[in-house]
Image (cartoon, rainbow, N blue to C red):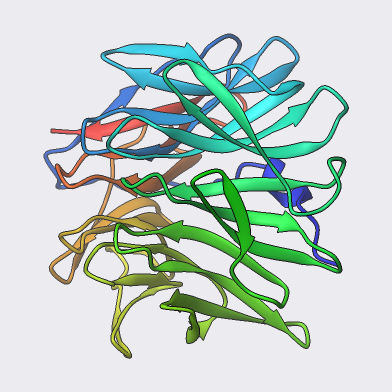
Length: 302
């Protein structure tokens, strides 16, 4: 049984950070309260969502026009924002009043519980939303964790087998991971078909159909390697835009890869530096800071 516990943790890259020849500079987006925040996604309007410390818990936030807003919860103690579309609609997951973990949609100042396909005490989490308002994520199903699509108020399973959905583009293509016999397969769900695109996880897809699979960019059966920045041994892509620019983390910190060339991004502090998303204007978001000091949501911008 695959569980949703991993969704509560925020992944970061712990690595020394090199210098960067890029003209991008790093901006600390602050926190709601306390010493921790992490950006998870950015739209083309420059609006950023993520998670921030609030007293003894964490809450989803929306950062807009220099101000960070607490999006609240579904009645429980914590929430996390995963993605935002160009209409300003936010998705993520939150604890409910009875302690369950449920996917949510936030828009116009209101957070809506998207429910699950199982009993109300089962779990779900939303991970992606496109500009049409189609939402994807994962939910406890009858016998396992399943990728779902939510559209016009209805949640349906994308795959009959164990699976996780990470992203959706404006065409409606969904990417994620399917599991068979304990093997993780990066998967594209398109027009009712599941297409294997590699091993491991398919983490993001753009409107051109390019998909991040580990250290490669898949499109129409062809994989372009994402070359590491100088002095790096490995890279993991996490986000991409419609121009084919990729961001992620490596053993020397957050990176930006475009047109076959990778650079290391500047950092607030040397220990933690991880990029997760990039918009079509080239703005990048992620997390930067020190494990013993400030861990901050950051924006890399010109």
